[in-house]
Amino acid sequence: MLLENKVALITGTTRGIGLATARLFAEEGAHVFLSGRSEERVARRHAELIDAIPGARITPLVLDACQPDSVRNAFQSVFQQARRLDVLVANAGVLEDALIGMVTERQMRYVFDTNTFGVLHCAQYASRLMARSGGGSIVNLASIMGTNGNAGEAVYAASKAAVIGITKSLAKELAPQQIRVNAIAPGVIDTDMARSVGPELFARAVASVKMGRVGQPLDVARVAAFLASDLSAYVTGQIIGVDGGMLV
Image (cartoon, rainbow, N blue to C red; front, side, top):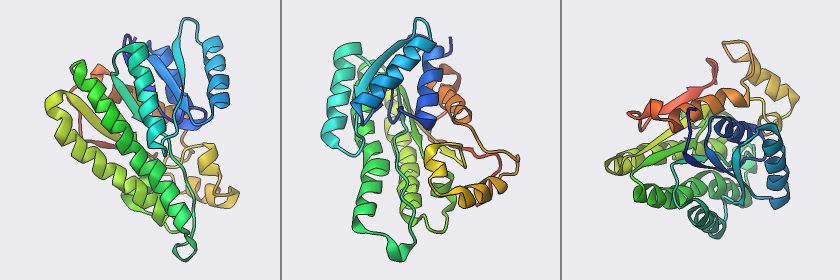
């Protein structure tokens, strides 16, 4: 199996890209720490995946990416239960669209606390655990909005552009410890978050995809699995677009 014997923590796994990634990782043999803000939702997804994948090693975990104490406690639990960490997929994120004149202070702080500072906090703890066992792979979820921007999404785009800067900087910093750091920049993916913009804007976004279809969470999960695996052992500091040729 592609990820056999690897210990992986994935944030934001109760739906969408995170859930698809957790499922694929478990199918590929990883010991998956399934995490999210809601203990009830995490427990529900854990039960579903255990039923669907015989023999899967999946551990439920509460982790709120915008709460530093929650992040610290989650990584402590990983160490206590697995004694190591090979892969981090920093997927947890929020989207709150607003024209710049309507953006509130609360929105700015919430989006950056989750999408940007959450990635930094997770990387701090993940890199410490990975260094103990000789290396690992950190996969951050950026966005095509972070590379191209979009009207009405200045805050979200800025938070994801910061993730790209974090990824490139950490790749340089952590390479001597054999810790690879890459990011995925999805385009329009068929998730609850993407559809939250409304049917008209969602349809317009899908129409801008040159491949002629909306992306699926599994499209992103497969790239995450590649970056987590030894197939990408010499790949670091890269931002990989998964967007079907989308134009923004």
